[in-house]
Length: 291
Image (cartoon, rainbow, N blue to C red; front, side, top):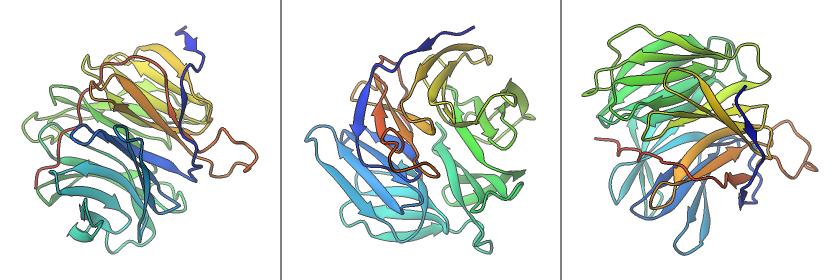
């Protein structure tokens, strides 16, 4: 049995997220970003200055990717938008499921090729309402449909393997990809069967060694798996609804973990906070999205 390490980290941000998700890190500005999806807010923490900002959003959003020094891409309930870093102004890049107001964006990540994988799901958790898309320079390709809660999207360092899970069934899958495009060239196969575990497999990142770090919602932990799906170790998180990890720091050697307070009493002050896990990691940088 893989060891479970006690929490040795700290609260990175005490603000309570209703649904903390989508953390990422911009090394060019030493800034971590994450969302409160339900709260319609983008949080930004500058590690160099210690300044924390909260940017109100006009819609639910869940994923941010750097484009260049001036622009970011954010995935929202109404599609993908370009965001001006200075002004916060949003402009539509490409609509996704514009004819389906009952869905929103969920987990996503940029492939080494610069293409984005982005999942959608029902706002009321409708079974099978979600899909997984590949977006390259605004061109949208449907990858998989009939998903309930697409999550765990990450890629091997060479871009030849993609990982994802439908939290509805907790079957974590891998699929062979074209490293130059991020498009599948094989059929997804089950790598980890977590269907018997409490809660669900949520967001994930892949480190420089190809190991997968997955936040497990409902169990308050981040699990580290080998590329073959073997569970190596687990790290406790104070918030039971741990949602997604991200590598942070100039050397990408620390780990941030978001959590969610949704559905839990306000008196439970561990829930919804954003944590630093307090361990040394070897993260890989998330590529910029290529327009």
